[in-house]
Amino acid sequence: MIVGIIGGGQLARMLALAGQPLGLEFIFIDPGAGISAASTGQHWQGPYDDPELLRRLAATADVATYEFENVPPATIEYLARHMAVFPSVRALSCARDRLQEKSLFDRLGIPTVPHRPVNSRAELAEAVEALGLPAVLKTRRLGYDGKGQIVLRAPADIGTAWERLGGADLILEAFVEFQREVSIIAARNRAGEVRFYPLSENTHERGVLAFSRARPGDPAAAEACRYMGLLLDEFAYVGVLALELFDVGGRLLANEMAPRVHNSGHWTIEGSETSQFENHLRAVLGWPLGDTAPVGYTAMFNCVGYLPDPKAVMAIGGAHWHDYRKAVRPGRKVGHITARASDKDSLEPAISALKAVLPGHVFD
Ligand SMILES: Nc1ncnc2c1ncn2[C@@H]1O[C@H](COP(=O)(O)OP(=O)(O)O)[C@@H](O)[C@H]1O
Ligand SMILES: [Mg+2]
Image 1 (cartoon, rainbow, N blue to C red):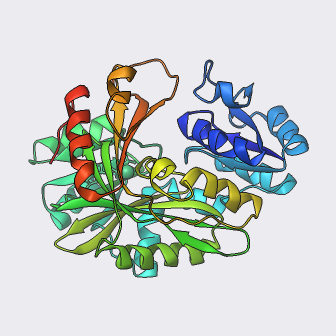
Image 2: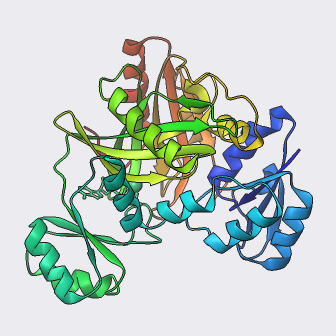
């Protein structure tokens, strides 16, 4: 079987690495040269909406999927007319627009961050009036890793933020003083079978995920799974879906969803019976899903803008090294490390040892 993936970054790479033992082959459509996924399948270089590449993909692959939500919806619409492609364009279109996404949370009764659409300077002033400061001004589309968003702390920030974000198709959100950030990841296959992973607890630095910890048995999981279930039902979703939430005094507020495998689920490669990557493939292929039960205790460090000495990492017991084969640039995710231990207490020494070899992290 051949799986076509729109995008050839590290998520596509890890999907292919999970799919190869299952006998799957991969094609990546990506305009970049030297993509992360290059060594794990065929790279068809060109724009994500290249008609000829898409036509060839539909003629060659058994199923298509994508690794990021900034794929043009027209690409998925075209593929849907010619082949099986998951997740659906409806889920994609909603997830790539912060306003649509939050309107859906509202409609489904999933508590979310107070927000207002902003399309003019006057609307921004009204939104600040309504929500107060601090607040976060975000572009509705194409933002990722904290890009396309500015925190407004004082009235003087309003004008500069307005100009820097281009002045239209924006959303203002109240700034949430959360105790922690968590995410819930689930897979739903073509037959409607659903599996939830344990909750992840996530630490961001400058808007980019730095550290995740699997939290099996977390008391917030039941609420997170309920919200996730509502979203999966709404879309009759197929594939892996991630939902990021803020925990405010034990109450969860939905931040955003991602219709794909998610960075806060990378620990599932070593820390779950079946990884999010394998389950995404099983889901889109219409295969039975794998068990999502945790295997030991796991935490993950992202390598953002640097790669440590791999040998120093591998010398640490329980540490698992992942190199995305990307050129190192500031702010770029180029690898990750998972630490796994069979009991809770022995995870801590591994985490401490990793902190010592990983520069630039700020932790709890
Ligand atoms: N309304 C908010 N209140 C407080 N912190 C926020 C808010 N929105 C975003 N953040 C912080 O910025 C991070 C990135 O924002 P997010 O909306 O998830 O965008 P993306 O991940 O697409 O860049 C969040 O994980 C959180 O740490
Ligand atoms: Mg996010």
